[in-house]
Length: 117
Length: 113
Image (cartoon, rainbow over all chains, first blue to last red):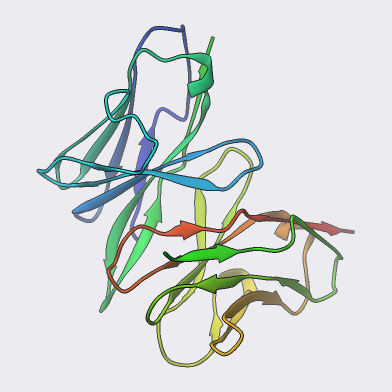
């Protein structure tokens, strides 16, 4: 089945630095990727939708200058948390639309636990 | 706007008993409904989905869900729970425009031996 590889799985960074999270679709072309953020024991909150070759669409309240999303190819999307602060600590998950027969499904990465100290 | 409600924060069942995790939805047009399971510090694993067709959908690991249009519900069920089913379960919906999935708040399932 479709697989989305997300790296790193866990990262600790100092406040003020930037962190890049990668998501790769391994056996399919992901024209659309979604980025979610999840706080402990809470639901997944959609941050942005990215389409290959175009600018990402951010959800209301998400700072696009802080959370930079790049979707330069059909198999790779990246999320860069710039000038990270402790309040950015969270679990970030990507998701890609994949075609399953006549319908599209959604495949999720394994998530990235970001801790900003 | 589409939305999903999971009214229970936690469901506790004994191993071998049937389980139900509730989900109701609100969406314009015909809904596309999904159930996912999440283990600690992991991504989401797909369980099943309803797009069209039979109201009873069978999915992975013995789970099934029943789509009820009149009650706008899509409850997840399993006839006999296992301790290994203990996890966080999310119901999700997308509309026909094919946008991102919108998730419910999640329900923690705890199965005791």
